[in-house]
Length: 261
Image (cartoon, rainbow, N blue to C red; front, top):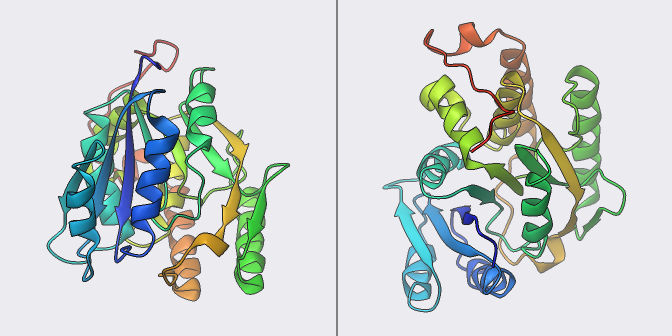
């Protein structure tokens, strides 16, 4: 069994259709391989998402944190990452809609062991596929990714927005120490882009593995508002060019990535 503790963090909003299957897939992937638990942050769901997690706790290591109201993906990520980074050595985040394969977690964790601080399941690496994704969304995703890669040079990163990632917990703790709660300011889907920009500012080392995105397995409706999200990408990108001292409180502590715990 892997000697590192892993937290799989799922931000969830009205995911009663897809969450039960995903929880079972995570359990099947990680049982007997890792010391793990699943943390679901229910962002004010109006369906049975929270009850599904409570019921699942009798069969697998899963915990629930609930927001009293819907606050957005960024708020769920802030809550979940702050909690998970204190409880484990590695934090995995993935979407709760069952479109991403938990079997990739093993490869992602192994890649972290090669000296990286964040590993991304990428739609833009050789071998990646997007199955069942609407053509317009694919076009906009690839277009925005090309623009971002042109403007932002983060070695090892091609996919700036996918939520399926593995992080070293020590890296997340340092990020939170430096930025405070402003390590994620965006509450919408652009928070994933913002998180990478902030990690880039701290020179966190990144890598990617190919992702096969399976929208055909997703039963719930998409919650992304494409035009609004792209506008927030512009705002996040603009903020990302500011020096750290303009984005956070002035108390900064140096972190030596060559001396990892």
